[in-house]
Length: 166
Image 1 (spheres, rainbow, N blue to C red):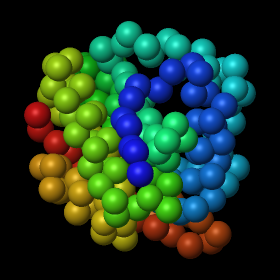
Image 2: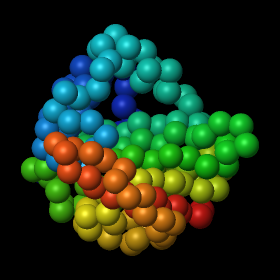
Image 3: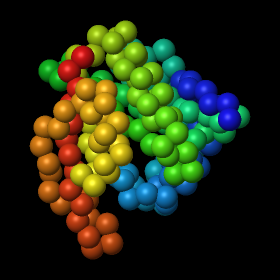
Image 4: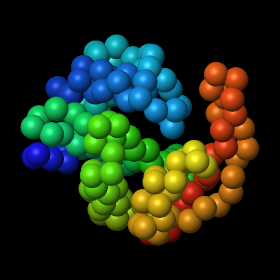
């Protein structure tokens, strides 16, 4: 298994959207389901191309033998919150618990430090203990629990807001 972590490019757009649709159907930990995200390949390609040289935003992909199996993003907040970034990550279910999330997270943290981020925020389902353990391993702390953050098929799920001070 040859895993690489690299910046997403416009050439990844179609595969990225297919990947997000796939993982949306594999887990209820995301803000979307199997419908994926409502973007065209052209719009996604333009978005990724626009981030190519950004010091405020990054989207990474984890690939096994050239195929996307995970991604992570960090987006700098605006104006008076520009010292902070919002982080997200997802790994295909077949690749959970293989250290890929840690590889993606370390790469995002490197980018954040190189580009003067001071804090990183994230939200994670309260029952996603593996993800919470990963975040705590890298120094994230829980700030609060947001009750009934998600409503999926009539069931509510709480979310932990977490933060890392760099």
